Length: 132
Image 1 (cartoon, helix red, strand yellow):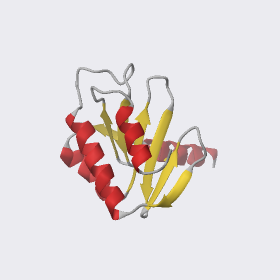
Image 2 (cartoon, one colour):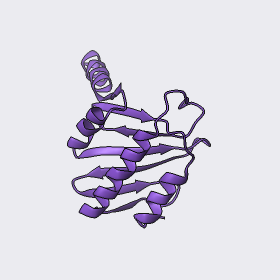
Image 3 (tube, helix red, strand yellow):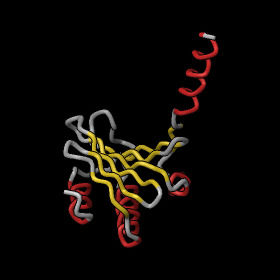
Image 4 (cartoon, helix red, strand yellow):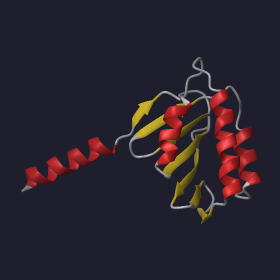
């Protein structure tokens, strides 16, 4: 019985790991089509903030209390434009270990974007969405 439980845990762990893919529009759209994804911002200081989208709800997690609310169509367009801008700023020369970076992920795929910019863009998005 113990072997069966360990085997199931290992299978679950292997299948739950998202496969890292290149930051292309096609890969990002594949993640968005799931309608259950997370947009994560990893700051240089090691802190992480994230916007998750599940069933037309936006969930913002940070060092402050978590905010959960419905997301409007206009906000979806704003977020899509924001993500498009950071994808366009992506630099393969920058290292996610030492630079601020974004991760867009669902259970199957993960895209890491390292834009040649500072934290400004994410903070501007949070202010526009009235999350900070």
